[in-house]
Image (cartoon, rainbow, N blue to C red):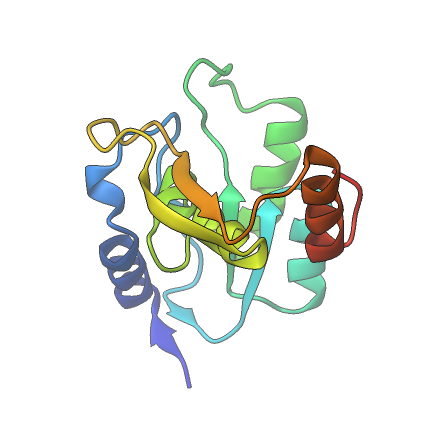
Length: 161
């Protein structure tokens, strides 16, 4: 079943509270593609490899944490940026990106999910007055050495910290 692109974007913006979070890039719809969405590909960064995978999967939309148009970057559409935008536009694929909203969200955010994986009890935000500070304050269920904690991270993430 297809959903209207505008509906999907509105719901994602609302759920992630993106309008209230100051960020270093635009959050939400960065590149508009087809008006109806049936297939979504997601990834961390809107790399050429992810775009190519989305084309192969016949995706209508790509959802990422790291999109385009960062503050301070060259705004010219040349080189790598030109190739990536060309891929999206040629295949009529939308790019939906949320940076800090996906870090700080209290249910699905990267920080709270990592805390859950590491068995850390979240006690609150590092700085509740500043939405750009994305850290959390938490506690371990039991004391452990830095080496044991590193092992826990490695076990949870399947890679060496």
